[in-house]
Image (tube, rainbow, N blue to C red; front, side, top):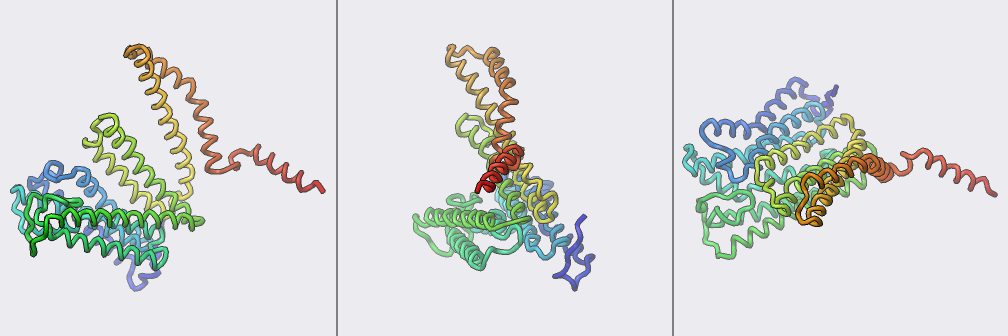
Length: 390
């Protein structure tokens, strides 16, 4: 059970901290609640919004980050990640709720005062909510502090560059083109000056470049912190690295590769939205495990099992595909049941030896000789013999 650490909030009672955390949670989840309200009014978030994946992702992550922020705020108030979780939850769910509000208003589904200005704001600064998740969080995880003042200034400079290009995008005459995350069938309601035709694509390219730089800064911070970390912080960084790798792997191997190389429309279905939402849902779960240090050292076992069974799954798929496709080509497209039976039989015979071999390889990669006691004793015996020789 977690015990509150309120050293920096001694002037406030734990009861008042809980009330404040509850209020901040409602604020973080307000965007998701607004989306529910708009849906009841007749807005369909998956047919009206231009990105079902983003809608579902933000709807789920907003309250989840709000809950995590509340727990950190009450039980680990010294860690600023709690405040950042509130910011992430509010910005993600709030931006998508604002998108739904503007689009429904522009389509005439609801009466939406100020819809044009909401659309302009999202068109110009709609990528800032994502920055809190993909840049600020990696920069301060897991301690809630930057690695050094230089990293803080790098983050500030990156945010200022994105704010500048976002403001420049706000001068574009047509909000249906050259957007970063949001597009609207609307002419710019705040068009102060006429810009030349080359302005929108140039500013869009600069904004994309700044966004890439921001993510590279975050990746560099993760690498540097991981190399410097020891003890518990090392395990916390392993959890984050595992979460990022799994999120990337699920997206690439289950959706991107089947869609782009095998013609399967997996990336254009609701399952892509659900899979992406579930994979990103691991981020707040990982943060909670790391901050509260719950089963912190279980990450080594999880990584080990993931590498073993992930490698086995990949090997089985490749072997089965090779046998079925190869026999079909070899015997003039006559495959079907015989080739499937042959592939299944070979997999059944090779599975256990392959699993044991892969398990030893992964253990040697992660733990060295510690997992092989006979090798350790043999090495120790050789060292003793070498020492005993005059």
